[in-house]
Amino acid sequence: MKKKIFFHLLILLSFQINAQTLTAVDKADVLTNLILKIEKIYPFPEISEKIVAGLETQISNGYYDNVASSVEFATQVTNSLEEFSKDKHLDLIYNLELAKALLEGTTNSSDYTAEEAKIEIWNNYGFKELKILEGNVGYLNLSVFFSTDYAGKIADISIAYFSNCNALIIDLRQNGGGWGDMVVYLLGYLIDNKEPLLLNITESTMDSTIYSEIVPTYVPGKKLTNIPIYILTSPATASAAESFTSHLKYFNANVTIVGKKTKGAENPVEHIAIDESFVLQIPAWKKIYAKNPIVWEGVGINPDVEVDPGEAMVTAYKNALQKLLKTSNEQTAIDKYQWALDGLSASYDNADINKIKVYAGSYGKIQVKLKDDKLYYQFEDRPAILLIPISDDYFLAEGVDYFRIKFITNGDMIIMKQIFTYGNEREYSKDE
Image 1: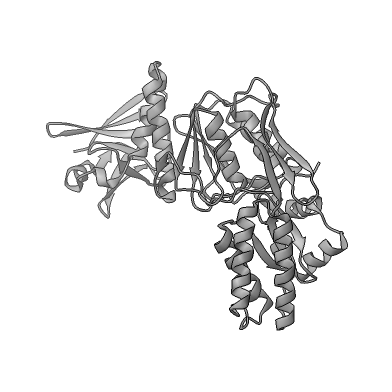
Image 2: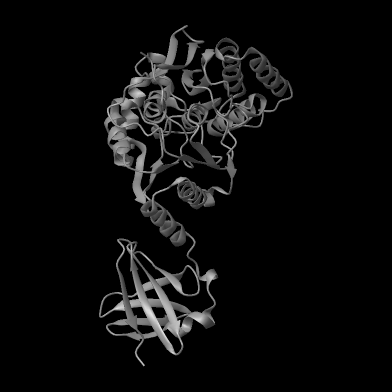
């Protein structure tokens, strides 16, 4: 079965590009063929009419007359196509090698995927970073939705890594899209569907092929459907990443989107040779049925919590901990969540340097040193650790997640208390 691909494949950029000079006849032929392809293939007639009208007006006004470079011509036409259609997937690409392969029928979507796999294996097929944050909150940085033919097992292993987490953050801020089958596969882990869930049915405008996306009831590992899930987004979040975000938000009430509005590129694409030099990337699927009524083409997906993308991670993490703290009835869990929240708030903005500098000194084998208005903890000859204030007397030890430092002032005496995550405490008096 043909797989829907939702974004401009990186492999298109790997073909050799040698710019050439175009004649007026060359440009006229490309634009004529381009218009014919759009009229025949583009799935929304009301939009294709606007595109064609806009191009024809430009042609009659000599808009492209002074463009000689093939690369510049492709760029200028692409800008026009996106301006008239508001479609981020509609592009003209100058690529001799790809155009030739498409004309000769020597390349197809499987070839694209195989070539892309050679690149994406260096990025673990998109599963870039997996970690467990304090408070047992999982974090997944997913850079692309790669084909399950290559990345299916990696997806299983990655989701299994988070199987004991109490919340999950999925970072799609730099995810520009990918393969529809991976979107559906991951949704199987994150949607609690008792029966196969038919997301949509689409028909190819090129050859009438019917394509359906169905979220399965069975996945090889544990489903993560009953925990808070946060999706981080930005204007770079596009295509398959938007599909994943929209469907997960619609079918799972535990999902919160944090960041900025996404790009607004919904429709899956095909690549068509215009001639021996140019390739048209064009949406070529018409939706027949959709379970999720949300449309993001040209408008994007709005976040539930709007913050700068650079602040989205901390915002989502804090939101997750606060939600877990509020809903937990177990004291051990409450202590863990509060510990994590306290650490997240640590900053030298929390402290008055005139109050904390009195803590500097010797505490037996431990030295607390003041340098550049900051405190450092050092045990014997081990490396010094920066102490970051949670409050004037309570400190996080940078890079050490299993203990904190609290200073207690009793008259002229200062006591340093080490507080460990597993409940132990140790006290050391400051040497006179």
